Figure 1 (tube, rainbow, N blue to C red):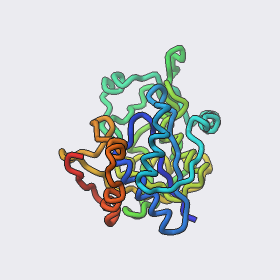
Figure 2 (tube, rainbow, N blue to C red; figure 1 turned 90 degrees about the horizontal axis):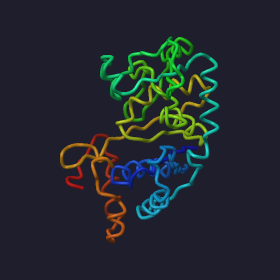
Figure 3 (spheres, one colour; figure 1 turned 90 degrees about the vertical axis):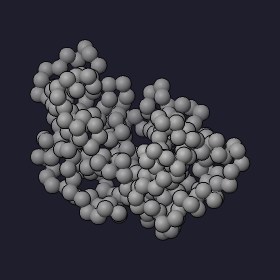
Figure 4 (cartoon, helix red, strand yellow; figure 1 turned 180 degrees about the horizontal axis):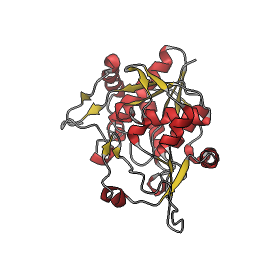
Length: 276
């Protein structure tokens, strides 16, 4: 049975980009008699607003979606800690005290998700009196698991290339897990069979596939859909002030008209909503 999910973070209201992703995940499951899950990714410290999950539910209802809700990330901290400890005991994690400025100063090269960490703390004695993140030794991890593949329903079969992202953080200085570790563990725990998300997270899947192999987790398929774009050709984002679904909902807009527009062919490439 197909199982998809929508996993928003409550650090800002949902906008049409979120709606697009939720509708695609919902419909892919509904078309095959599967399950569509809602998971709240609420471990982003003080940025996680306790009032927003209920607003998210109202937005999804307004869009005409039905879902099964699974535990939020804040209820899964033991899972993250256990996985990190397992990797640490195998010598696959190392502490890092570098700041973003340190990484920039070290001449780090750009990668798919920003600057690629140059390995400054790798193999060194780190002053653990300072806040330290835990990074994955990708080279050592790949030596342990060998070549890996993963399947995207739009882009086809992919060779996992996690080295392109460098030694990513799995446990942050200020949080119990990074997105990479938490999302990978959560999808396995929720028995997600098709991870549906935007093309902006395509590169992250190379790391997630590696983590699945290291931790003995099941391997789902992926569906990286196109992104909704604003009038400037940029993806809709909370940080750019994209208009919230709640504003349309409270204004009495007909959500079904919008939802039908977003459903047209499940656009594989980015589309523009103009000034929305």
